[in-house]
Amino acid sequence: MRRRQFIAGFGGVAALPLAAWAQQGRTRRVGVLMAFDENDSEGKTYLSEFTQGLAELGWTDGSNLRVDVRWGTGNVDRMRMSAKELLGLQPDLILAHGTPVTAVFQRETRTIPIVFASVSDPVGEGFVASLPRPGGNITGFIRQEATMAGKWLELLTEIAPGVKRVAAIFNPDTAPSGGLYVLPAFEAAARSFKVAPIAAPIHSDAEIETVITSLGREPGGGLVVPPDVFLFSHRAHIILLAARNNVPTVYPDAVWARDGGLLSYGPNRADIFRRSGAYVDRILRGASPAELPVQQPTKFEMAINAKAAKALGLTVPQSILLRASEVIE
Image 1 (cartoon, one colour):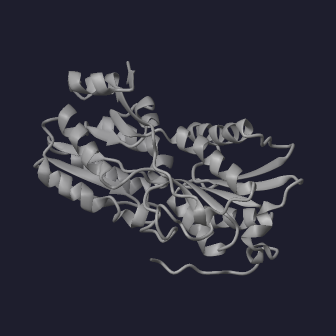
Image 2: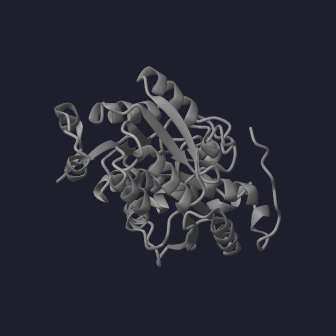
């Protein structure tokens, strides 16, 4: 497990004990750092679900609660800067969106309670000691397990049976465990489906274009896009390149299919953010994050874009249509 570091400062907030957050009768302050750009409609939806979940539990922004929001724009440097801004406001609690955001906050404080939303590997990242008993100042909600890579490949070979080689694209700076969390499961699944796996680390739009263009040069190329805040922030570019180069692609969230991508499968992240409000409520009322088990996703959704399938010359199997939560015509 990665060693946790304690950095004093930010107005002395890092030195306050967890018990201090249980004080009642005052306006509480929650800092929220979203990994996406502030203009991203999906990020706004997640934030809205979180605040609605809090409102249902009696917490109203501007009344007994103040919510300070910052946006990471999919950039680790921006996340670090925004985290310091939020900690300087002396929040009672932090909501951290995604793995890189949670990692930034973990380096800065071991005392302020942190609830993460949409982290894939909290034990492997060293955020918690175990899922049942986190053991520190951090707990939250898992996005998915690495075995999801097998499901993406299953769906890809089902809708595009001609694929012979499949790339998994990721940014080592922002992907869970630098990409190593998903890759072993992806490569094992590729062997079982008899396709050649390609690990494709990228850091920029130009590198994304190189990978997808190379997949499209010959028939049989396919793409899997695992959860990664950098990729999510660049999803319009990825969807466009996949369509332009005739590369069948499976994505991790329904918004990708709604934005023009072929097929998606993954947890309902809006639900994860709404459920996160319940943990924030419990901690603000005195519960310790060390005692709150890390939660798994409970709602999953599959979305298929029929128009994208037609443009790729693919026939959507009835098996996929019957399982789809959403069919986009």
